[in-house]
Image 1: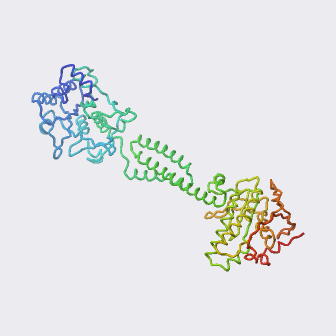
Image 2: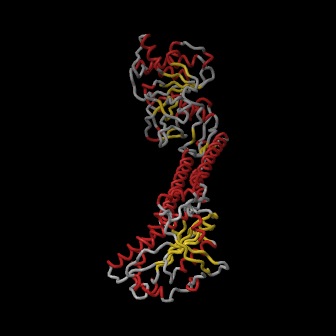
Image 3: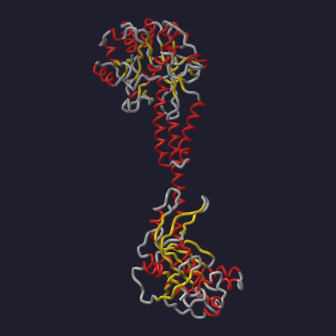
Length: 566
């Protein structure tokens, strides 16, 4: 039981015209000790320091009460060499007073300021709760119970503040209590009023104690009870806690390495819940393992893993965005990315599209007569002009093949007017864009310009990402693609730079007024002929000289395909 010097005691002493200034005269403590001894207290411990003399009459009154009480325990924090004290005039004088003893009442908080631990001795003097128990039981408590004189052990708190039975100091002073209340009990006398500043944070003074601090005297009562019960709680080995911290820190990264970002978060929360249950079971069995540090490691690992995963995905998506933006119009990049899977791959689909192939006529012969850097500069300027025309019409750039270009309209984003878009892009390419390119060549000092060939064909194609894990490309394959390539090659040696398949014309929503039928052509690899259409070529000044080879039978392997069947 705790006899607490609380706020009510100060008020009551003021009413009784007893000095209510702290510290109380020692004769008042003597009267309380006498009352407790008379009530049959088993052991009386005073958590008040009596190291310096005061009024001789008061000191003598206290000494007589201690003597009559027998084996009392007195607290001190003033410890000299070899654990000596000046309590009641010194250790020798104290032993004359009914073999009373002093105990070191110094408590050491953990690094977070919370009081959790106690020791068998401190500064060479047995601690206050250990001496209390030895005086109460008449038996020595070995340091081995703690694991060593200065080995800390956990305090087994009975509960939050005010769990230990309590009675105000003034009631004991006035005799306003039932004697049976103290019979056979260990009674601690000490300050409980917060104004006396002997209150401390403990593991149980949080939510359970409504945020209240625990009086030092009640904390001593918990410590003494812990020792009497044989120290039922023990700290887990240090290496176990380190292992738990490392293990918990690895949970989220392990799940993240398996590609379980969201599931990794849920898994971490599940692991945290399981760990809390396990730590409680271990605690109930008498062992304390670290809880906050492993959970913090789990949280840190989870946050770090999620950050790495999502940043990686963000970088991948940004890379994919920049990659797609090179091949599809910027305004449809988000739609394309929304259609990708977890690996940023576009799933294969079969779709009716219009495929375009284009090539710069006579460029091979031109490149053989020019330095490498000039050839690269010319082809880059040409490809830039043509790519802008394709993307402006909503086409998807599939690949560059030297000075050749493959593009598709209607994939990966469906477009009902893909045939119209393809013709619009082709018209722009063989018209203004080719003119801009040739004008640029003239500005660079080249004497003549180029012609080009474009083939359009519509029909079902298989679209999707293909390639290895290290390199993925979007493509469109199938007979429609092959035929479009053949049509482009068939423009060599022809007066038209653009060949349009009948299938493309049929799918046009608005047929242009200048569309003209060219004829039926045999296409390599096909039994049936292909009906081919075109539009009038815009004039390309000076292109005759530079691209003369294209009209002199040097058109390449597809030249035989360009002979009209009718």
